Amino acid sequence: MALQIPILNENNVVQVSEAVFGQAFNETLVHQLVTRHLAGARAGTKAQKTRSDVSGGGAKPWRQKGTGRARSGTTRSPLWRTGGVTFAARPCNHDQKLNKKMFRVGIRSILSELLRQNRLIITSEVLVTTPKTKELSVKLNALDSKRTLIVVRNVDKNLALASRNIPYVQIVEAANLSPVLLVAADKIIVTPSALEQLEECLA
Image (spheres, rainbow, N blue to C red):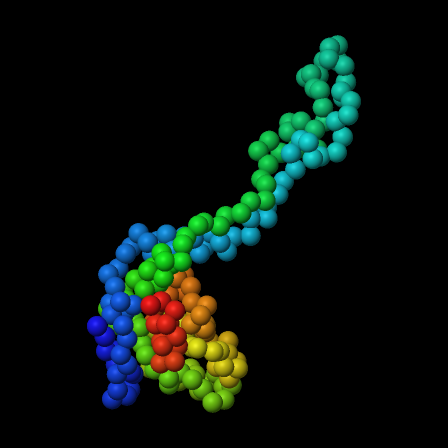
């Protein structure tokens, strides 16, 4: 079956697949999707030196008895100022596995819920002809949205230049859409061509 989504400020509708935009909301899967995306964005490059990495420690600092000081066997000990770290951090990979089918189902679930909440807007009016912030700002003010995500098929240079000075406005291509961007935005503006591409990718 096909769903009909009205195009903003036009006496026209666009037909989309119910399998893509009429799916039930799966909160557990969406949470897994967002967590995986955030985990994959971590650098995982933190590193500290253990007692085997620091320099020194070849000889016992002083004899075992008779000095009046605590016994010590190496200057590499974590108890020493120049010693290694006891539980040193090591570079690691934070990526989480998620198959393609689950990813598509999760994105479909998010888009369907956004459509039910009237947060998904289909329009081409956000496309600008000049790289002027004022032109785009006037168009976005009518939507009354604090955080706006604009999804296009291909990022136009004029649109990119016009949006970069407006706070809480992001431009993304449909092929690079992420669950974090969808969940974080108050309103998602999708052009008809980008909507068509999304449906092709998620079907």
